[in-house]
Image (cartoon, rainbow, N blue to C red; front, top):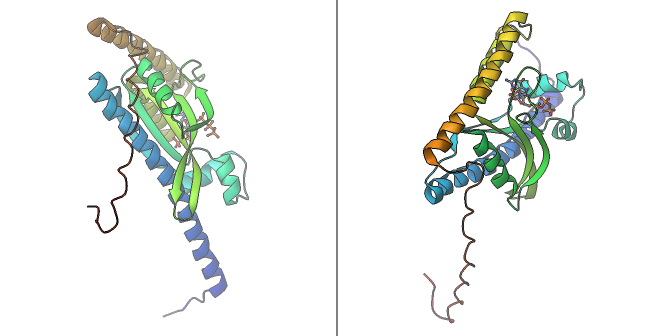
Length: 244
Ligand code: 0O2
């Protein structure tokens, strides 16, 4: 049996780099979970308070190492370090919120970004201004605090808000580009653009129908009443009595 000699030092360094990278990705996972919780609280509160659920589904992911490397290459970065990756790749943590209607997309965006511990870094409104290929979605890079044993961190998370029709289109477009390795035949590109228009028309029609059926303006519902001030904490028990 042949043996392969491994340079101990190189082995140790590789292990250390792997551990650092895992820690780095875990921080993004925690940020993503904070945002997931916020969205899920909004969904539950909406359902109970307004008897209406504006969210169809939520999907989250931390970008895979391969996908990060690919995006770095796309950006022409060939000697990355952790700080550079942090600065340049702002969608390592991603949450996609699929809503029923366009009005819900903006309502959810408003409610999430108005929260005190959410800092909005970048907003790209591809619904107001779709991409040339017809892509529509509302993107926001937000930062949320994550509290670790070592202290607090502010983690960027990309949140994409879109309707079911926009999501359907984007996922088909993604699959087609993957199948053709980004060299999509012209007639398919054209068909995709016209399918994006059809999806927008469907969104508008469905929203009109919904308004007609429910007879309420979609953009804003009555705000929830303000929270009552929190009850003061009970005074500490007198010495000798154990609080249960
Ligand atoms: P993946 O695999 O979904 O993560 P930036 O991130 O700002 O440095 P970029 O990529 O121009 O640069 O940002 P943008 O426009 O906000 O797009 C980010 C993400 O939106 C993409 O992530 C896609 O998920 C989605 N997206 C943007 N444009 C399109 C499009 O034309 N079609 C589809 N299907 N999705 C799109 P990634 O990293 O490209 O991919």
